[in-house]
Amino acid sequence: MLPSQIADILNEAPITRAGFGSIKCKAAIGDTAWDTSVFPDHGDFLLLIAKRVLKAEGLAVGDQAEVTLSGFQFL
Image (tube, rainbow, N blue to C red; front, side, top):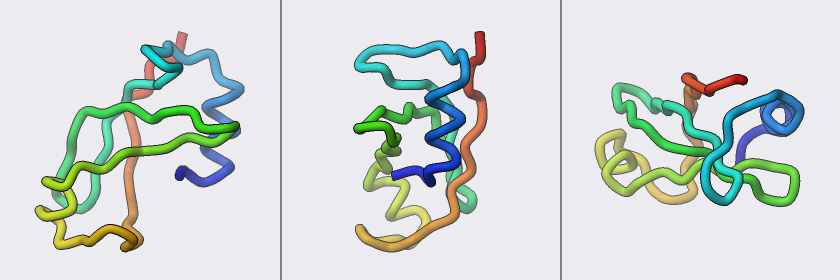
């Protein structure tokens, strides 16, 4: 789940949305970057992280990581 401050910005900003209300963006953890989407979830947003990203960064499910999000398409 993204921090509430980011969710507030995404909920209020005029952003191009795709299927299921998702918002396309770019994400990065450490040296691993990928094209993805964040998905609305009851006022918050979820970022799904693929197993290949976890493996590449030496992370396990439940670990905390610093994530950089960019490339949101504002109207």
